[in-house]
Image 1 (cartoon, rainbow, N blue to C red):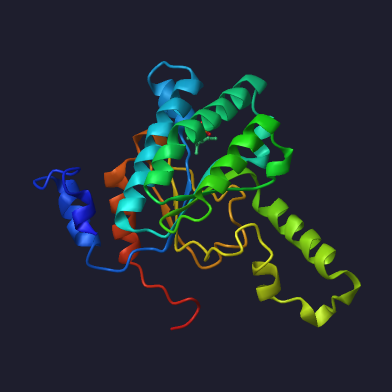
Image 2 (cartoon, rainbow, N blue to C red):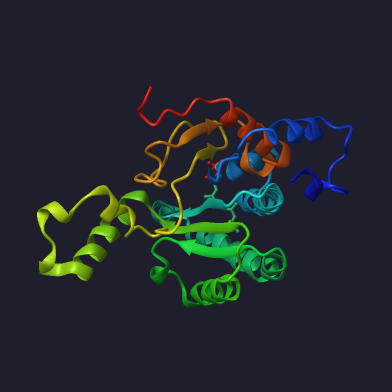
Length: 255
Ligand code: FPP
């Protein structure tokens, strides 16, 4: 795995030492990230919020590329929540614009690097221009077997559970008996039914909240909070989060 960074990372740097360290222990299979702090990053520099989101795209690229090089199997990024519609219309348009630009520009790179792209959330409620790009990117990368990149869009943990119950009822209807309802039935009807629960959830910007992200899925996930604002979150920060994760003892309720 270290050889995947040859030529990209200075072997004399702290970053390289961190990479060497994390390469010795198992990596999280699924990393989920609440990308927070774009607005504050911009404000600190006297810039418009949009500039913070734009700078956040660089972190998205960095984290996707680094995860792929590390051989992480699943990466889920919280890009737009069901609550984010409460933001000013202009900001919503800008965020959707950035997302479209990201998909258009990154698709060749995702394909080249064997990355599978998937959008999770109430995608059918998004503008048709966004939906078209999403389904194109999904179909073009569906057979890729490298990093599985999930972008949570118009996503909410509670609405996901609501949608899951609706899906179960639609599928089984009157045939469903009370005793048929168990954790497995719910898990396999969630948006990401083929994806294991996150091992590590990162939230940037110092806020200590989950904000309705993956409510069901994070029951046993290790949580990592950092004060670093999302546009400043880079490869080294990701290595640090992984190192922290590797030093935890996961017992899943056992002893
Ligand atoms: C939180 O910062 C960030 C968001 C609501 C959006 C995250 C989106 C991106 C990084 C760009 C698009 C994403 C992809 C995957 C292409 P905030 O605005 O809540 O910051 P604040 O709390 O400091 O105001």
